[in-house]
Image 1 (cartoon, rainbow, N blue to C red):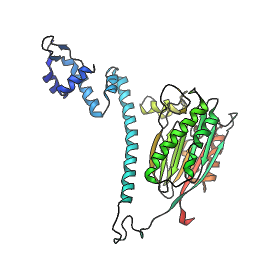
Image 2: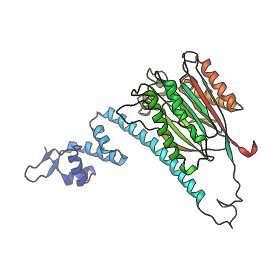
Image 3: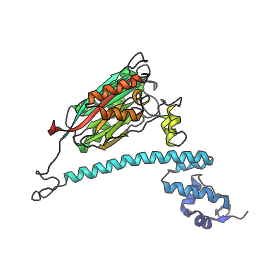
Image 4: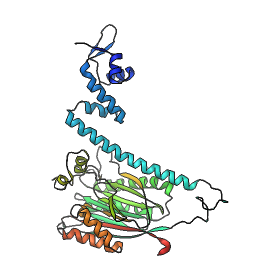
Length: 370
């Protein structure tokens, strides 16, 4: 069999000799033969396909450990793993994009301006619109469950829904929400809200662990938003959801942390198949009790808000049984958050009410017009 020298193989695969030596050391791409006297590496022509795959995956930004796993798989399984990696990358990129947009906006607002130039940012004469929240929270046991393990809360700055599970689900959901309520008590500078929210989430995690004890079979989802006066900070873990109604369109602004959602992301299920999947409620991430594994991290991001926005936070007791088109129409038709929350809970119960259902509806309004 004709062998390629490391130089020829490097040129053909577009991997540098340095990279090839590293991949050999990591057992990611071993040469076909190593000269026992000179230590010179030789590669077989059929190794080019794997080398090119490694090069492409590196350009994609996949870590070496992930590349090793992909290269060990059959092509269909490798394709699914690459699809899943890219879905995670896009989600992380969206979070960083939102943070970058926030920082640009925040720093632009704080740059000193010439007070002698009217109309520039920072000028006292600049017209600003003061926004505030109008909100309502409602939680219902539903028509099947014997007790309500959901917790819903709406305050001046904090909106939250938590869906508990296990024998201590109710106190777990309550503990998670209680840990966020202190954010209602004082003004929240937009520049530090993410740090404050991360601290609050750590407090919520500890509170749930204290309730649940050593088992991870007790826990809760948590979806919450914190109003800074100009933006909303979102924290999310589990399969409760947050929606935005803007301009007549309904947008889901959270991503379910469930096995079914991961299978959707990987292309292993269609949306139609997902709705009937027997494990559609199986969570991949939630706030749970103790264990040897580190606590999974919630999604935390900033969300730009506009006057006229209507937000919905809900447990899966609503989203699992009421179609999004019905949710959109109900939110659009209701004149107040209270009316919207009551109508949505009613819609869930009209659909059989198989689970506890909780809703928080909040409107962003011009404070000066109220």
